[in-house]
Every structure is written in C-alpha cells, then in structure tokens.
Length: 194
Image 1 (cartoon, rainbow, N blue to C red):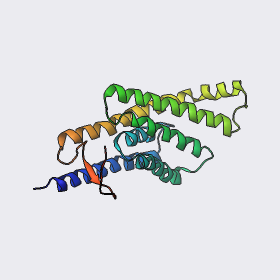
Image 2: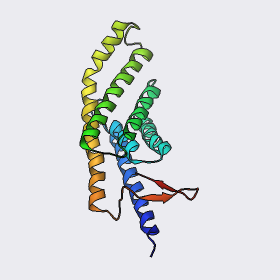
Image 3: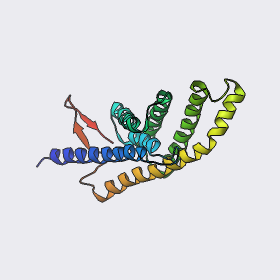
Image 4: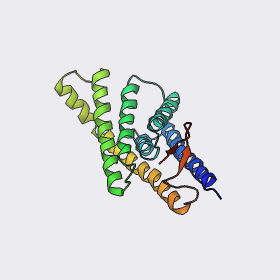
C-alpha cells in the first residue's frame, strides 16, 4: 500500500489550513480596529515560516494586503508598507527549521521594529507632515511610538494565534497535518511545504 495518497492529503490539508489563517488575517484587517493593531505582520511572519515556496510565501501577504486595500483604501505609502511586510516574510524564513517560542518572540520584535523604522521613514519622506530635516525625522519617529506598541501587540497576539493553531493542528492531527509533508511539483520532484 502506497503512502503517496496520505502524503498528498497531508499537503492539501496543510495548504487549506495555512490559506485559511492568511485569509482570516486579511478579513480581520478590514474590520475596524485600533491603528496598527492588526494581524498583517504576524501573517507575513507566518507565511515566511511555513510556506516553503519562497514566491508563494511572499505572494500570500501581498494579495491579502491588496484585497484589504480595496476595502480600506489606497494611499501613497502602499509601496513602503508592502515592502516592509515583505521584510517580515523574510524574517519568517528564519523560523522555518526551528520554531521555538524564543525565536518567534525575537522575530515578532524584529518584525515590529523594522515596520516602525521603514514606515515612519516613509511617512517622513513621502508625506508633507514633517520637515525634511533630521529634527523632522526625529519628530516623525517620536510621533510614531504609540503606534509601535500597537504593532508589537498585534504581531505578538496574532503570531501566537497562527503559530499556536498550527502547532496544535500538527500535534492533534498528525495524519492530516505533517511538518514534513510534501506534494508533487510540476517537475515531478517533491516540494516541501513547511
């Protein structure tokens, strides 16, 4: 009896679970919430950590952001914000082979910090809210500090939800979800998912 159908089912179930969590994050993003207290940073970390195909890992958060922006509105800082979330996906790559609570906490802190630095620099550079001086940049970062705490709280909470749900699924349903599952790629070689 071949284990191929079970492996294929594992891969399909894993894709559905991961896709559902990313869709959940996109939906939560469009409902009213405090500024920056959203699941997008956690979704980007999660995508980078669990989706083995790098292109797909980068694509999922971008699609979720784009769909959300159709509802919350487009703005001049979109390229900066999107680039920042792509950095968070790359930070998530660091979690791929060793997802511990300590490493996840470090990734969440690093993701929130880079989002703060990158997006506030974008506000200073592309909006006309602050003078284009070192003092103006400092004022912009100072004004952004309250939003940093919301970003960190949202990333920490939703990372715990996403990674915790995946951990529980991997433990509760080892037949349905398996960290080492694979599917056949177009070339016939096995491509690990997460």
